[in-house]
Image (cartoon, rainbow, N blue to C red; front, side):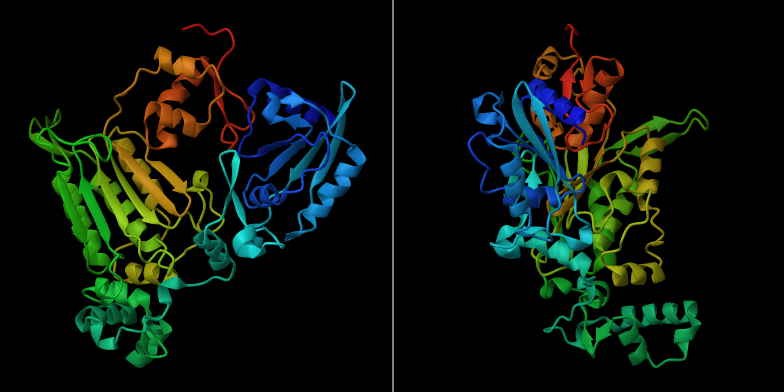
Length: 480
């Protein structure tokens, strides 16, 4: 950054008085901090990178104390960067303000194929960090594995299941698949079935793979009890709320079987527990029953969860979850977004495929097109139902889709308490927690965006509306 930009950052710090997901503050008044490794790691491991500003003391009400020696501190920052793997190459900027010196170290993101960046003195497992809010948190073993799995192109869906004999596969299901495969791929039709099974990863060295178990076994949960779906319907808007008779769940099911069976049973559960609205068609004059949610959207979400969930050993103890609440349905699967895709690119860019064999088999069986049309379809049918856009949430180790069943607001966007809360710049998570809304995307879309359009609330980073560092604050001079 330029010196002028660093001055702007210092002024912004005084206005906002907080660290962010991409901003870390260090006093460095008497010496260079000795443990920059955690922040160097976490900033390097996120797409936006980050900036460490030296010379501001957060513990003394963000006092601009300046650094002890601008020459020496640059040397020591670089020394610590050389202790990282891959080596961190910071961009250092020095500026003088009111006879004090300040340093900014811009930490670039490393490519996902090189992550995680870690401190060599601790090793990869203990020296890898991720930025959570304004703090640096140790990466979980699964998060580290996820980067390695993408980098090395592991295919967990075709790992061998040692305990499973070939006889556990339903031969009728398998034969139906092979017949369809041969009819669609003439080059395979002349090969012996044994060769086709190996080529298509139904078996590996004659042993059953996880994908064939999940697709062609009648009960794969005998080997992996948690590779299932848990589904609940509750009386309130949050898990834990009870009904008029004290019931915790209106319905509670564990859905098992192979992937096609679980898809069918999950749809039956959702259909059973959703409300049905009866209307008179203005075109025909006849009664029509309209489901609470478009089943086409629900099916696409469930299918995506079953196809794209993580099937590694790290998540084989985690089921897919369906939560039907009074105002929404949540479908959550283990494993965040795979590869380079960002959440704002969903449905717009071709993603990497975590489980290509499962996806290919389901395409042959006619259950999915495998043309990346699922997200656009979900958005389209929700719009046709005049319902809010789906909300996608990518959290540490999981991915969730939320569908809301009404456009009616649960909270007046001009609520005085909310506006008072926004007198201080707030993050998406802080706003969602204040509103008691589970998903940050919905909180911003429903309660903050209307205020921004009216000019009542403004971005702290207007040039980057989707920045992970974005905060929202009441516009100066706005009354309520």
